[in-house]
Length: 98
Length: 262
View (cartoon, each protein chain N blue to C red):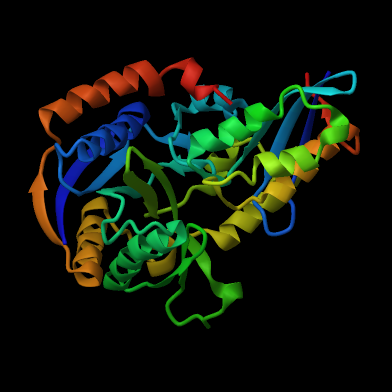
């Protein structure tokens, strides 16, 4: 199942998260938005690290992934990403992507 | 500070983005000096930030209908409609006076030159972190409520170099921009258009007169000269840079794989 959630956490730019879930596991997550991350590849590595995580491990694992040394975020925080991914997985007003 | 000055005029979206990257590669390799480039866009285009989804942000059918190109940048940030604007890019090695390790400080330093450039045009402007420049209408009270965005900027660090590019809005066509952009809630589009008209303005709207590309280039050059003591060596892109830019345009920026990669 693929779900999509848009959020604008306080102090952050717009986050658009898409998650693919199978059972109680996150298959993949895409974190899109108008934020900045340096270096960009390290952000994508953090994003890729979410694949396969048990939903119960979120958001702590996501927060850790995006807090990795060397990754600098502007307009978004590891907490905002982790919370939005978690919320997208868990329901809320997330919508199933077509 | 010595800067190679390139004024490459109007090009299509893929070439514009590719040339910025080709210059970055050349500066990183030590083949080209620190570079300040000015350019514009023809056909008009929408660029999206590195982390954005193209189908999510842009109505590609509307782009086709209106003859507007779409391109993904290597820099983060948001979607930008490039029509009546001067665009600049700065490419320097990390550690250069304009590229300290502190990313926000490097935005501040480069934008400081643009702020002086705006002053040359009679506009009081200020850097607004993270990546904007705002301005106040002549005679308007100064405050957060009266500041309007006149320039957006975006930066990446690659191969030990900084690339920062940004817009100097000459005029803003908010209606066309919103015909091209997808908004999260269509029913709020009217309000969003009104909000953006309040928050974003071009030089024409601020000064009540047309400011052309050439006049804006001269002002921004003067800004770099005054803010950073820049001396310019006017030139053309090296043939190798042009060859590499054409390759990057066709192999990356024009491809669906790159455009739709997120």
